Amino acid sequence: MTAEHQAEHDYGAIPGGVVEPPVVVLPERRLFSHRARRLRDLSRRMRSMADFLGFAARLAQAQHQVLQKRTSTFQPDSQAFDLALEHGMPPLSVQSLQADLDWQEDLDALCDALELNVGQAQQQLIRQLRQLDHGARREIATEVLNAGRGTQDTRAFMPLVAAVLQVAWLRQCSVLPRPPKRAEGTAQTVCPCCGALPVASLIQVGRERSRVRYMQCSICAAEWYMERARCTTCFETGKLDYVGLEGEDGKRPLPIRAETCGDCQSYVKIIHRDTEVDADALADDLASLGLDIMIARERDIGRSSYNPWLIAG
Amino acid sequence: MTVNVTRRQFFKLGAAGVASSSMAMMGFAPESAEASVRQFKLTHAKETRNNCTYCSVGCGILIYSHGDGSKNARQEVFHIEGDPDHPVSRGSLCPKGSGLLDFVRSEGRLEYPQVRAPGSSEWKRVSWDEALDKIARYIKDDRDANFVERDENGGTVNHWTTTGFLAASGSSNEAGYITHKVVRNLGMVAFDNQARV
Image (cartoon, rainbow over all chains, first blue to last red; front, side):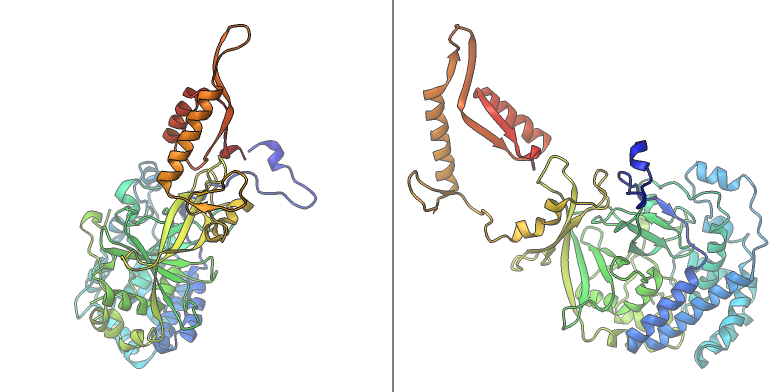
């Protein structure tokens, strides 16, 4: 950019040259309250799923409260982050931090914030979760961080444990000295910040990343750049089919399409913030569960992303 | 990395998967998800990366088309926008690029060769073979008649000034190289490229 391009005018400055989109964007602390609002909105729009989305809204609101009220006692080694960032390793690796982060107390706080605002079945679930010892909770957390399905007995607890892990990891994101660099090769399919799977992909808005696609992490909510019109799992471009929902009036009920890939037989949802700026990766993925069901009915393909609030059996 | 990317499982969230999902286990009706989309139908589209052909900048574009690629489905371009991943244009398009969809759908768009005979006011459709034979014939005849080997001072020039050539901008480097070799080897002097327009 030349000095001429950067000159300020009375009417403001014009954008100078081509803007490179950032490769990794760390999450904002307001994420959970935005998500709660979006989920409340979606629960009104997708009326038959109102109970579930309403519960998810209260869970996100409880996450916001825990994040606001509590701080972490975890103090990383002063050079640990720099060392990881320098060598292209995820600085908040879910594997190495699982034992260090004190999310167990966050979980009790989350249960407190949630308990009185949910239905009877979920209240009972929360009571059972409180009675689990730390070891059992840790096993559930490991299953979430490994993007697993859990067992018949633990699957119902996984979204609640996941919610508190999301709080613990998002909190750590704010102490990172700088965002990680772009990962290379297949490492691009997992979060550069914590190594977890994405929850969905987002078409972003704003001057620097207008219509650019980002994957959002299912745990720490960091976003990383991922080229459009290319499979986010196997990187092939030849057999992509974009599947969406359409009403009789020709309108889309949700700003969502699924990018299905015939090469690796998987798909990932694309949430269009360019058509609905309030859209949220995790929330809109939940609300569009019907799309997953319709895709499964039509083709034998599976999700490459992982939404820890909705774990398939 | 926590997740082994090469051996990743893909979760199926069909009706059966939802019935035993965490949602159902937490006490929510799994049928509600299916009910939420009952009034909608699935749509299929393609999103293809390409380059704008209207000038030498070659801005990146994304072309959206209907049809799932099956044999009988009619393919139709319904939207074109700037490709935000393109390193040069980063998603921006000039007025020509922004109007690409209108070019694609234009009623006046040329889809096959046509010829208007000298003195006639009517365009007649011809086959590609016919058109190429005709063009080759004209080129040969005109070159045979007007090729100049030497100028008035006897110096060698080997040029042909009575026919010109306008090349396309939507060509690869290699196509450009071959075009240049063919045209210059014929001795043609009037040579320009759509890319400069």
